[in-house]
Image 1 (cartoon, rainbow over the protein chains, first blue to last red):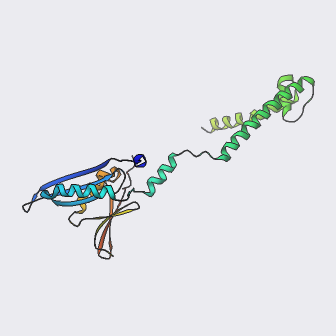
Image 2 (tube, each protein chain N blue to C red; image 1 turned 90 degrees about the horizontal axis):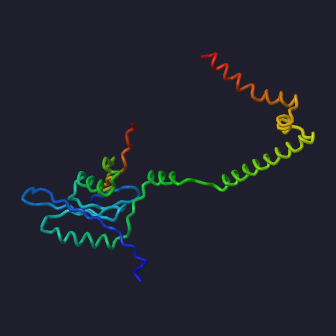
Image 3 (tube, rainbow over the protein chains, first blue to last red; image 1 turned 45 degrees about the horizontal axis):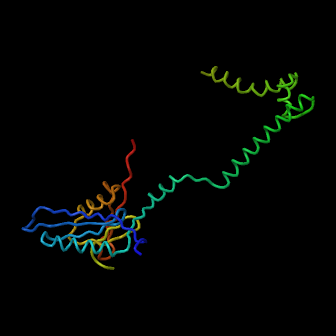
Length: 155
Length: 62
């Protein structure tokens, strides 16, 4: 069947130029969208014959789709790139966050029981109100406050 | 090498009739490719043939 054949719009333009040296010249061009146009020039009386010829040429020629390097690059830039690595990294980050959350929960639970060490001690301190881990929490926030003070002082 | 005029844009090169001037070719190309409304045209001599190489003019900032 002819279902496989895709009909495209063919644009043909005819320019009828002013009379010059007693002849009226006709300029004709046509192509499907995005393809190189066929260009013809002739006299006014031959316009219909030119139109037929142009039409047949456009119907029978191979597609002349223009590919411009810059445009291709721009088109590629528009396509968002989602790599497998990025997805895996995202999954890993979520996984780490889940683990951290679980760890914190464990730590809080352990803090209630009086156990736990390392980074989890801060959480224990916040929940259990211990003295030494509380100092650690203050130190962690101190450099940022100092930096802000210095910037204000410089101004 | 064949004689005559050719138009090249991107990866395509087409023959054009000798009766067409460069200005007329520019007008036709601009109709079919709006990005060529203000094109950069390089005229090359390839043997007997004249090749007009069309490319998009870089836009101005601002």
